[in-house]
Amino acid sequence: MNAIPRDVVGAREYLLVKPEQGKSPTGSPHLFKATASDTAGHFEFIVSSFAPMTGPPLHLHRHQYDTFYILEGMLTVQAGEEVFDIGPGDFLSIPPGVAHTFDNFHNGDKPVRSINLMTPDGLFDMFEGMAQVAEGPDQGAEMEKVAEHHGTVIVGPPLRVTLGLG
Image (tube, rainbow, N blue to C red):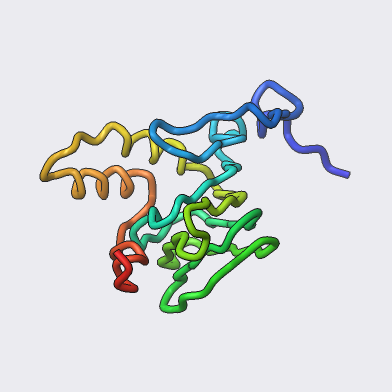
């Protein structure tokens, strides 16, 4: 069996993150169990929490696979032109270049909980960059610039707007 090169995870032979450990980007409900600095940029592993009516705009990642495994709740997803629901135990992987968005419409006031794997990395730094954008009339354009810098392109509105829900 071929060993993983030591530099894949930096100076350590392994990465262990206990349940209460991880990093959350400024203002984010998501808990990153592994970020770029932990994986030499190969991936990010996130325990995500999606509150109702808080999904992102329709976007695509130039270089990343955006992968979801639903733990609790029902998440409504748009991938390309298709809209569908995924629930506990469902696995979804969206390749680079495919426009997608998602939102929590079916769970009352409870969040959808999922595991999210981004390959390669970039989401944590994008969230941190977006948290630094000042409120004001140029906020939307500045957020799009930050996203683009991290390989994410905003191509449309959030799903709740597309479906006339908010």
